[in-house]
Amino acid sequence: MSVETIYVSLLDEGTDAFRPVVAERIKDGTFLIQGNIPSDERWAFRPGERVVVKPHVFSDGTTGLLADRRAIEEGSALDSWEAAELEIEQTIAASSEPFDEVTIRNTQKFLSACRSRVQTPIGVAKWYWSTICVSWDDVEVEILDDRFELYEFHTCPVAIEYFDMSPGGAVPGKLIERLPCLKIEG
Image (cartoon, rainbow, N blue to C red; front, side):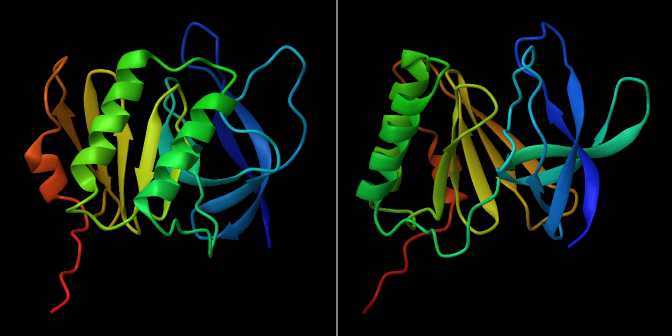
């Protein structure tokens, strides 16, 4: 395994800020963050976490690999929507940063809309900020207070699409249609 420099977003800086960190390459695009967090910094991802990186162009024009999301561990797939719901509840409860109530409601609506139509996700996690990410093999949905962001990793470059969520509204059907559907046996 090779050791490389990747970048991690710094939290609570008031502007976009990044810390170069040493990370061990696990496989293409996946790294294990190493080192220690300085006492005066908050990182989006911590040492010991496995992350997936993406190419990033910084404000000064330089490029680097930016930690984008937590990696899903092999064999850690969720076995039911109930397990996904429990994992989300535990993630919200364990977060040091509070979640917006609207984001939590949108997450509950999303889970409800998916249950009977969409395959069980392989993972759920807290995203950079206090948002929830639901993942399948090559598709992820980030749930925010005002929208859903769909990331499709089977395309190059990664396809990102936004679906607005109005207060009290329903989860957009067009989003659900883009997710891995349940296989009907029979």
